[in-house]
Length: 270
Image (cartoon, rainbow, N blue to C red; front, side, top):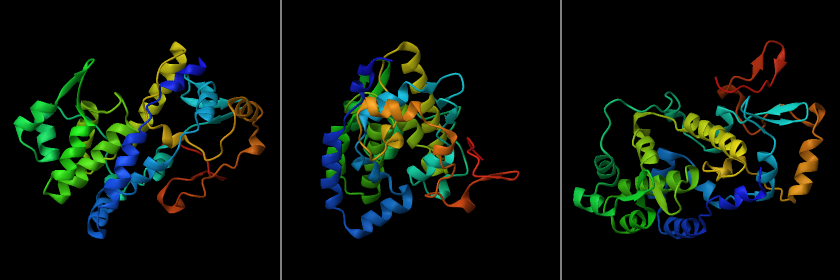
């Protein structure tokens, strides 16, 4: 894969800066409302992606088996790991995302989420390629001026999903993200969709030899920053004995972690 492919990962520094200022204005009651409804999603805004690691990892992606293959070692992100990283509340964990047969129009979905008029929503909708989007700047301005605190929190979270977790066009929130977000209050978890998008995006980039990773890069991040060459050496020489087959940061009683007499067998999902 070309080394340039990750240069096209969206960098949302401006969004992060604005969100910190916005958060600093919220009182404890608003923060409590946010965390009760959406968990600790804002922490994703502060993670800096290690692009050298990403370039190295992409070259070890096995499209046939949807996993990373390092010599004789296979690894794959799991549903449970993504759920933990996203801090998804357990209340949202009983249904996977699926598109309903009779869905609201894009305008109606935006009206429902933002609480704004049809005239306001229609004026801001843009066409980006084959997809309809709305600029995050218009949503930002709406948050600052909206009288409804719940709507402010909802739209702030929508920006995180559209710009950090599912980035598509820089500075815009895509219709598909709004379709998913609109179903979150129906006890739907976005984790399987995020995990599937990771697999799809990595496979497309590897197959074409270029492209842009459009899923949440922060979920595959590490705090250790090394050169790409150093990461390649580490990953190429990885052996079973070098891997600790458990995730100590996950709560054991919330996941399936045993298979027969073998503890901590990594599984794709429950």
